[in-house]
Image (tube, rainbow, N blue to C red; front, top):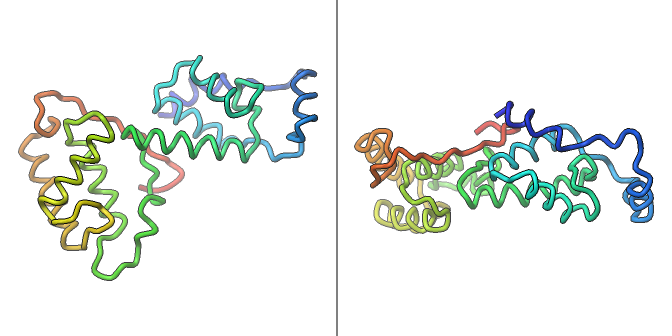
Length: 201
């Protein structure tokens, strides 16, 4: 993961040496007073870039779309970088290649008799790793059907603590039955999920 970040970091070019035209446009837009992007944001942007498998051209186009007149993330403000990161995280999660760690499902914590957020994250991660469905939307629909079959609910948010344990045991049984192979597949494909290392998963 680190090597991917280091490999892509040069795409964020330094503005040292001056760019009068860019500086003038920044001044006219009132953006020069904004807090600048920090190193942590740059690292996360490039980790997401790698997770989304963006080409150099696609990466530059997306920065240009966000910033308006630069293809370098180094020219983003702190707020712009945060907006970009959130958008890319959502896209990566929808494709099953990103997990945000503790933040996900934390709003469902402290519900009496209901599954803890950590159990919900565990189920979601286990499903990604055993499912033979590569399309994120279809994989989610398949999980809903699986949940209903095992725990009689069609959404992770509705799982009770007992229901979550039943689902986890069923997923472990499937994984053990199929070994390292994806569920209902002879392929050894297993999606790689990038994790936000700023949180513990």
